Image (cartoon, rainbow, N blue to C red; front, top):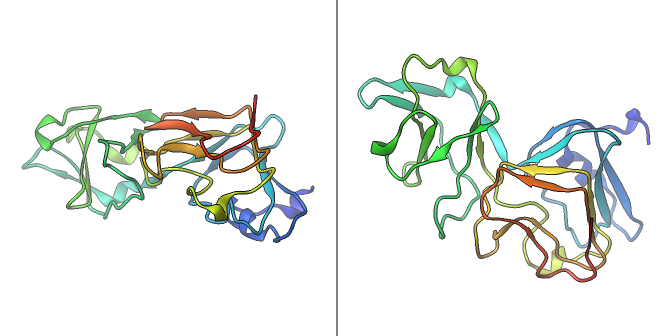
Amino acid sequence: FSMDDAVQSLDVAVKKVNSGTVPRTIVLADGNYRGGHPAIGSSSKVLGIQSFPGASVWIKGSDVLPSNAWYYSDVEGFWVYSGTYVPSVDRSSGNVDQLFVDGVPYRQVDSLSLLSPGTFYVDPKLYRVYLGESSSWSIDDHMIEVSMRAYVLGSNTASNTKTGFFYKGEGFTHWASDLSGPSRAVVKMNGQGQVLQNVVVAYSSGNAIDVSNSTNLQMS
């Protein structure tokens, strides 16, 4: 391994892994990683993902909503995201959306009338996000992240069953998993002889880890 082998995202690294039976390891440097990681769990690849020694690695289910896409509504008295919010989440069992301001989780409310500082509201029909802060609150001074994905690794299908896959040393945060159905957990281990080592799931909805379709799983 050398820095000459480095790529800019986890998605790119996964896609670069060759198909076959030889195990491959993706090493993550210090930082935050976002994206859908579509090739993880592919039946044609054997791989594992681990943090570089001493690195702080977070795999996030959120994206940043740019400050220039928000405006303050004087009539309604809150901030409105002018973009379209269409996350890949399942709300069948309730509110699973997650919103963070400078890393601090905000509380989701069920209607615009309940908005207040420290809360947010999602209108799933209009695909809008509303933030309950006042006009004096400078949105340009803050980073706003909102969960866009429900889980990592893959769905409960045979094509995602793979022997020997592992996560070692990562943290998973800002995921919007449900309590049931295909997206019932943030991390889904669906294979034989897989490994979860020094893994943390934080600030996410639903369940943390689903091992219902895994055999001989090692966790430490």
